[in-house]
Length: 380
Ligand SMILES: [Fe+2]
Ligand SMILES: [Fe+2]
Image: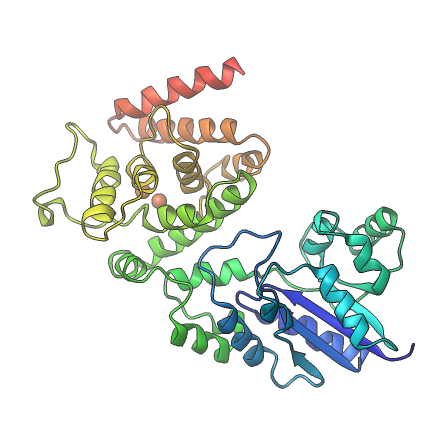
């Protein structure tokens, strides 16, 4: 079987330049007869937020991979109109190309979840994994290959090319804040995203961009990025998390006088006020109805006892996003993926220390929240 077919499946929501680089490398290093790129219909192992439609993703793929030799964009899984299972797709490809070796292109992230896919052994019966390792993942190329081989007892091929850190989620976050993403997806796909009006929250995104400074917009992206990571790990709705994080600082630079119907609680320190005004604006100006989202905005600075997990996620992400560079930020950020409640408590402590150090007024609700959660963490 000298002829080779390379299969590359995924959500491609949207396809980005690292996907393109992988496919270019396949063409150069493997010279297969054909590279089949197949967007999934509904991903069985992924929760999505701000999804583009299957038709739109198909068009993104056509645009992104155009110009690479022997690429075929297939709508087969989309046409199946059901959950896409790779083992069924691989059986179909094998039937179509019986005299060819089938190579299954995958990133290291797919390798680590491979045993959770449906019937992984069925895939390996008909296809050979073609692994592309990403730089900066903290796992060496050799160790991921060895681990996979050991687990499944199969041969595996690897690309010379090592990918860079880039994800479709990162693209969506940029687009949520209406940024140009040509440097992440290329001009063509960036243009299509704008044309299709996908990956943003319409007037919510618009309002945030119009009312925040560039620095605050970067901070907001950082909060969304980290909050979405928590949401994935701790199983909270990505959609609620994205909206609450997008809007958390919406009122940072708004003036109370401009909202005469807004009635804040009494004795709110200046630095806390924007959480209440933010929740007010989200509800009354932007039409957000979801109480959980509104409460996450409403207590993102002060915290309070008995917060929802969503609210704790937004609070913690706000304190620990990559742009935060205070003494222990990195350490607590790492802790947050192992012991979230402890990291949440330390973030609250940090917030109290900061206020104290500056000689500012401590907001009693924050102290209450700290005592409430401190007892619970100790009581564990
Ligand atoms: Fe804030
Ligand atoms: Fe913030």
